[in-house]
Image (cartoon, rainbow, N blue to C red; front, side, top):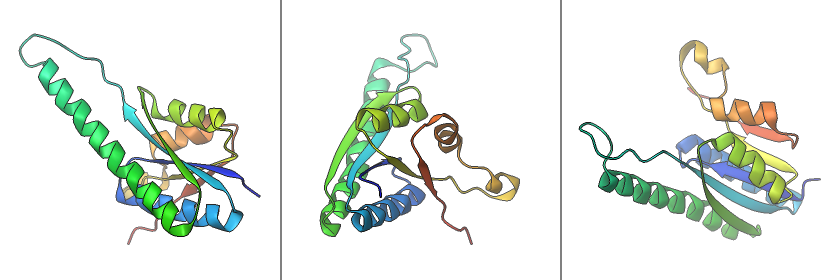
Length: 150
């Protein structure tokens, strides 16, 4: 029986489907959910032509926070509708998979429930790179939600 699920999201349609599945599982298990959004940390490049200006960087940062807040609100609202206790975390990290594992450990989660990344062609048999890295490096069990592509 799981007591605390970490559900990372990137706001994509597949990720939202994984959030729904994770919250249903948490409800069945009587578990707590921690929703996580990892914002990529990009170095600021100043100055020369063709490089990212400080103002452009600030706009990217604002946009990332808005996307994170929207995705985490989706988790909170769904959890509330289902009566599942929920908290959310927004972090900045250059390595999303490391942030996911670190949050799972620091929050004493006993399951990470996350989406795969569906693709076409030969790559459809492969998981998304961040999901694969979490699977490869986590000592906490990982449940990968995969939506069948039609």
